[in-house]
Amino acid sequence: MKDYIIVILNIIYSVFKWKKLNRIFKFFGAVAFIGIERRRIGSDGDGVTTLVGFHGCNLRCKYCLNPQSITTGKEWRWYTPKMLYKEIRKDEIYFNQTGGGICFGGGEPLKHADFIRRFKILCNDNWKITIETSLNVSEKQLYSIIGIVDKFIIDIKDMNSYIYKSYTGVNNTLVLNNLQYFISKGYTNKIIIRVPSIAGFNSETDIQKSMNIIQEMGIDDIEQLTYLTTKAKTSIPDENSINVGKMICNYLKSIRADFAQIHNINYQTTDCTYQGFCIGTCPACESELKYLTKEYHKIIKHNSR
Image 1 (cartoon, one colour):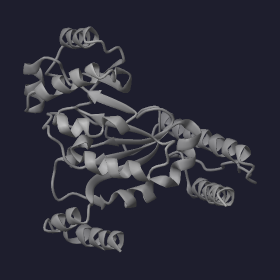
Image 2 (tube, one colour; image 1 turned 180 degrees about the vertical axis):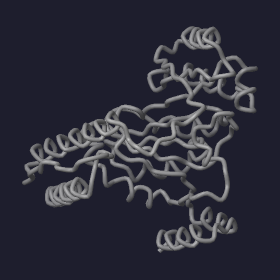
Image 3 (cartoon, rainbow, N blue to C red; image 1 turned 30 degrees about the vertical axis):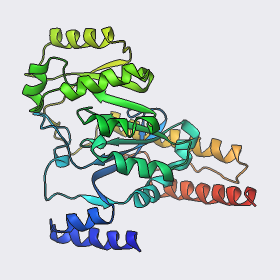
């Protein structure tokens, strides 16, 4: 009944954008999300992942990649943990077969540690939980969730406190304290540190200094990246993006075929004849996935008798 009420409220919210509804959503244990992106490969943890973006952030970065996470009046959708689980589990075959799972981003997911804990209780134990975070949160928020998360991908911005505050609007004291906590508890195997190049804020020398500090702390898994401060504007997908979609389609098809073989499910793939831009799936692919999931649950039910 509660989830049904949330569904109705989401419809009302999408039409009228009444901020007064926010209190009602929260009363029912729902949280606002800016989006759910399925079938991500190699960018948010191992295997096939679903990226779930929370609304709300502690920082005000000059080049925010997801500005909708800090603005009001946008197209949010509210979920309880149970509702989100039902939405996400459609890809459980991909998670189980590839060692993938859920990546919580945003926004700042650690602001919603309690929601993630309640979601984890519902999850299949095989699903991996990854958190993309700035780590600029209270110790309590981190400590309450660290034991159930498989991997933290930490965007460190810059280790120089002046550069950090200039870019984010806040200081990095909590970030440094939380990093020390990971180290003191022997959790360095759970973290990946991303050190970005931020145009107008840090130099190659600054980046190298940050990396040296992190390595001296005893953390070796470090990635470099560059923030995109402008977005390419084109309505025509290039040949590479089309090929990537086809590659994703073929990869997911092979996962479905392997899964069917392992569980002795009668399944035949069909050759894709679609021409043009491909996002990696289509109604036919989704139908095959739904069929395999249904058959898999029949097997589980039968074996549990």
